[in-house]
Image 1 (spheres, chains in turn blue, red):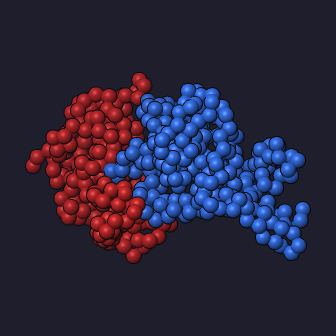
Image 2 (cartoon, chains in turn orange, brown):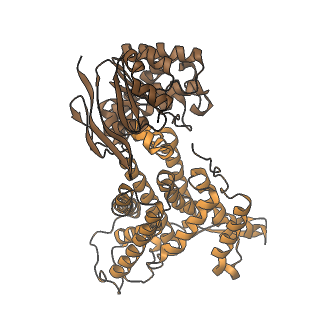
Length: 316
Length: 254
């Protein structure tokens, strides 16, 4: 591998890794507050991509119920993206109300929530297929405005080529990560959220409505899921209703690698998984998920709590 | 004196076990009311019923005339009922000051968006919250360690911090679950003084669970004794101490 290739893989890896990071944070937020993995998160990722596509491009192909329908107003991409994320957040809130809260109120086992979130994921994916078919949708390149498709620079004699979209995605993800970090570490909202995550019963006895904070958490989670889906969509296209399934699994690999419930762990895990994928040689790219899961397994043999996770302390 | 907390025929079953069985008593305003009984008598369960963590199976709980039965814990807290725990439950990842500020969350008006985006009104309120939390910390003598993590505090200091956090809620009824647990005799003596002090200063009514008999006898105006979920005695300390059923419950009979 030449230096230029190395650098190119590195930059691509960090870019896709930053998307994994914000996607995985959606799992982490819900996990840290409810102690469950929300399997519907991958479906929200897919849905977010379609919603943003609908508002930015305004029409859907030839297969589904909505084929031929075109939305009269095509929103500028940043507006469509923001709305897509907000709608994804609201869908996530709906999922909490329909699939999680009723079970929680009845004292259901955490495993039940896992099964009901899988159910929600399947229903969502099938609904997408029913409405817009299973075609692959590509965002037109001009959504990001009049930009060069690639940035090139030379290292010595060789040339490094980076797609501009990757650079924009990286910038958006970094901005979101910094804002989220500020929100959680600095604001009163974030402190209350951490209190609820650490001990919901105690937080409620201090006058904090735990259910309301769970709703906020699901909104944030869905927002991040929708954002990740839309960004990946603009880079690689929206690859059908099952688009989110592979990403959903990769996202779970990310949070397990980083340490369940750890916010810095999700970011680190996301970047590592992104880099691993970028460095899998092109001939073997079909096997990149297998490579990252094999590596995950090896790391867990040494550190079962994940890279930045805390080992489980017995509660009194 | 008038009643603040009214417990009327309250029961709680866990499966076939009656953890609290048809218990009735009334806590008067301004009173320090002790709840004692052997391990497993249902004292903490009763606290959980009052604070809304566990729903009651039967009977009526009311606070200042407001029925508590169907209220979730955060609403009970907002009515003015604060509590501490037998096993300390501070937020370990937050500083002492932040622990106290959390309890002021429900007492402020700026709300979510203000607290996220830092509107000017919210900023002013934040300053007030910080000042008030600092005052409460000073009262328990922890103001010089406000920015240290709660988990770095000694056991006794954690207990005091937990009381400070409960006080920040501006409660009128304070439930203390074994506040003297793990304290030495000098600390226990100090605690008696401290509980009286906060009662007078904040016009509190205090309901406390305690095992340490001299402390309960010296501090409480009245005492209720629970055994196997049932109320077996109720009255001033001197009377309760002589009650044969209480002696039997503690020393064991056939």
